[in-house]
Image (cartoon, rainbow, N blue to C red; front, top):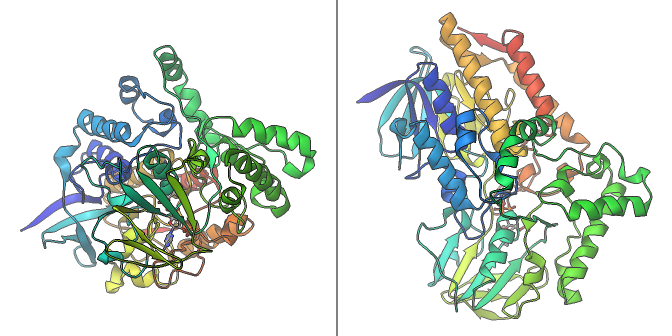
Length: 534
Ligand code: NAP
């Protein structure tokens, strides 16, 4: 039997849940399909030890409901994953969202029928659902990738990818643990595992520039003061490039003397959160010389914090400047390498040859382990779409359409795929953002468009090819000057573990959240220019 809904949403994370709530309020019937057995998306899957916010907790939460804001208290300035997952569950309960979510259900694909103007959505077990609108809320980092190292399946000990961390407690006491990967995930995990592991061996291919998080608890005195500032917090986010509580310094680093510059860097390095990245001089991200001043400052911090000078040098990136990849936030990460139980292996000097039944064989030695943890990242932004078989007009698949890189209108529509909306999709400001802030914008924009159509009895909406071309061109143009497009990272679609993903292809929108919002608003107030309705 094919169930029928007004809307099908794929994913019950932060974006899917809010989208469900908004559309239900419009009186529409909605079904959400979710692969996990609970809500939370990224916070459901990424339960590895050390996982926590890098955004101030209160800036990350939903802002749309005063009741939710009033009833929830964060216990830390940067909350850990269990608390965030509790928060998402609190929201789901409060808004009674679960009744419209089908859990433990993977979607295999969806196709648009031009005669009926309806999407048919197929689960992996062959169940079918029909809907007028199809909304993907699948997250930009939801497809973990294992390393393409020979013998990954041969290891007999415990092996985990951070993005599929088990729900049971994993103990490290007395165990010989290997971690592969030193991105934002690896850095959070390493500093936690190092506390109890018998031995921890970190396999690092490229170091990243990390900065101190300076997390702290929120006590009963500070709690009401933070609540009283919510309007200000969200206003700060609204006006900041990445929708964080940190707005960039409008001065140029190179216009200041070294002492003046370093004083700013010192202050930001000592402050909580992303200030050193998001609240810093603007030219750092477009001018290599300016960027080098910050890189040198942070390199010296690493040298101060790591006792062994040779190890410190291995931890300092040399192939990219500070902030040109996602900055991992840390708490005593560098000090971990001063511990006797921790060893850093630089894969540039000593590559892994293979993984075997007992551990990892490098070019120099065979290292036995009880556990290998893969913090090797994700098939970012497009990965979630690639594994769905989505077919639009004339049976065209999304995979074919995006074979040479995504093409979208505002990162939310794809020409030839009517009534499909891609929340936090490719070329959308939301994946380069304090994500719930931009998610709320995405969801509200889509909801307004759905309401517009419903009130006018319109059956379908599709972006025109011209509007799509224009947006895609704008996305690349606005990223063009930015140094981060010249560096290998998931921002640019690079994933060494996936064949064909070695060419840089910018997947985000770097024009900033305020500019993006203004653009989306202008499209809406113009009566949805760049779209055709039936
Ligand atoms: P990532 O940034 O892509 O890092 C993956 C790491 O694995 C890199 O160090 C990479 O080395 C290494 N690696 C991959 N394949 C390898 C191989 N075959 N051999 C050896 N090393 C290999 O992934 P991530 O750390 O999971 O972070 C992804 C994103 O998730 C972050 O950028 C961030 O946006 C998000 N995140 C957010 C939070 C938060 O908000 N609190 C926390 C964690 C993650 P190379 O550098 O050499 O490629």
